[in-house]
Image 1 (cartoon, rainbow, N blue to C red):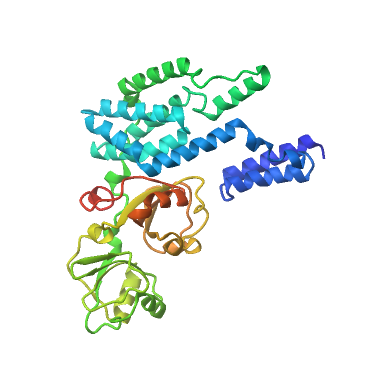
Image 2 (cartoon, one colour):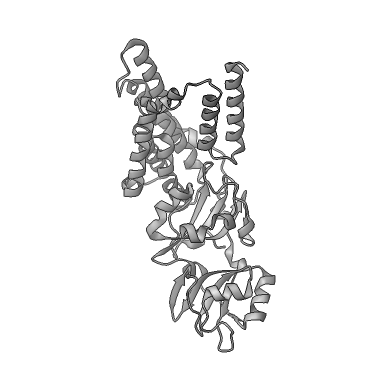
Length: 399
């Protein structure tokens, strides 16, 4: 087979795997490379030559810097400061776009957008408006900002490298700035004065009540006649094998959020559980637990100073895609307690073990505050809002 045909077939197969999404992107890319090496199209000593290209090294360095900015919180504090000084939505939009454009000039525009998105959504919620009104202009700003510097976008780097090979003289860092900066100014002015008014007004999922967990959460009390007194949660699940999830335990005005398997149940404990009606009935009949009449503040029971209740959306490169919660063992491997999943506005609170994740799924999770950023990075997801505060949780998940 001719080398051209092999290359054409490999490109088509790799493209199909990218679109399908069930195989990790990096695995698909390296597999294509290995096929070309084995078939003799590429010499073995040249297989990884592309990794030494200045564009690849620069983009990788920018991603490292982006991660450092995320973990330090510098950018978030800067944008929050600018937002507080703004008096109206136009000035807030201008502030968000300017900061995004500046960030995109010195780092990967996707990374810049990931930094700004949660803050943009928070601004939209505070102003009781659809997030799309702010998110689309911010996305435009990230694209415009990348045009101002040599490292702003990979195409700039590639063009600069090609010029270096052809003429021996690469573009300097700010050679793109005269044209790029002019386009950024024109783009931002047009967007804040006219463009944002043309964006379709969509009602946000937060206003609709994306998650309504009250209908699926119940309170049960460990009574003196209960069979669970003095037993651990591990024994509880092992003995009764019920499809329920213990989200929190209230004990003498103290909340134990996402209790561990070795937590011992005591008389008077109030368990906040997630279960379908049939499982709830089995639970009461078999364990001697009693349904509690009065409702607690569920949001307050699910979060604490150390445990946050967060909403995240799965990125296209998340390794969760195509797998179930049971396969991933989120609780054991990542210390994450999955509460609910929403796909295209349809929420699911039961049988989450067998729920297969897809790109764009919105997850409601309990996560320790100390590992929030690490969790976002490891699961490859983007936060839709700041960690849920018990005073504002109604705006996020409860009707």
